[in-house]
Length: 81
Image (cartoon, rainbow, N blue to C red):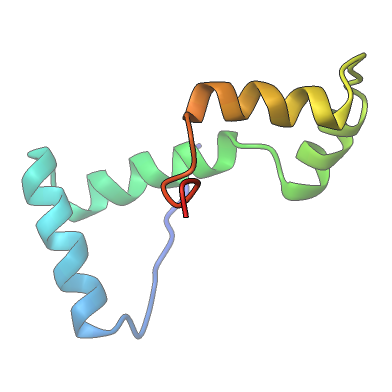
């Protein structure tokens, strides 16, 4: 059964930002907040995310990872100084 949530005491600039974002998306403020609440509820909590990422392992060393990132990023802007 659907539930109703009420948010009190929003600052005017916060509400104006919600109105702007809703207008850009072509939806009402309640529709925007409903979609955001749905997205937020579907995300894992920080505790769940950390537990999941700690289970992953890699055979790569820290040096190998940094070397690969350096190759992707290219030279540092101040490398010639």
